[in-house]
Length: 292
Image (tube, rainbow, N blue to C red; front, side, top):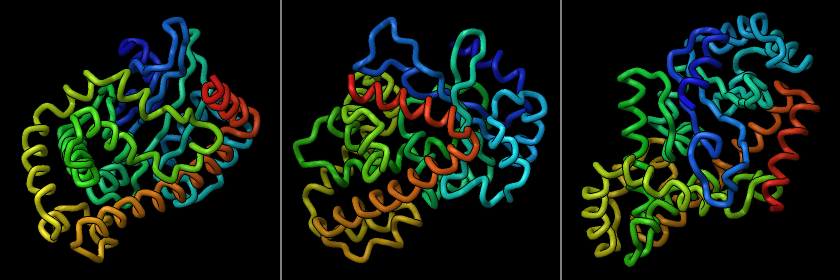
């Protein structure tokens, strides 16, 4: 798997970091052994527009006709949108389909640190395969994971198990996601956690003891002013209470708003970069999985 991804990347412009994720990289419940899933990648680059301009010359088939025009004409702000990512899908290489999202390094680091966008932080709280990275990126990914688990503990019931904690953690990035209404499998969160439970344990083994100790304090207190101060900057701004129940509601509302707006924005911009044909093909594949 890793060798195939590295070979795929050799044919594309230089990246700062690259990660694989999803059902094509990690086992998920609900998929048959013979089912060949698309390999999903996140590519982190220095300059988004420059990278795409070089890649559109080197690999024109990665783009639709409208996608090449969009990449060439669109200002960087329009390319990045709310999530920072431009996605290209249904790219065949060595009889394997790939989808990759490209994001600028500074946007990636800012999103994971302050949750200015939650599209990437949510993705990187789940199992990922590192292909290439840097110490700074790894450190920010670790901090983002810890904070995700911390918030999952804030939202979990007192009698929650570790599996329940991972389920809540994984759910954060799907609350309010518009795609869950028509394209994504409604059992997606359960499939991810059940299929990759051991991977979740490996990812969070160094944080679990600390978080579970915090959880005991959370369960005993109704005033959460101490916990409020530890939230990511953009979430903290939206919390106006220290009451346990009200704070939980405001946290959920934050994710609902973020995920709704960002998933809608990402869907629209994916059509711009992939075009109607590729975009429709990708959407239909999602819907077929949902109906299984």
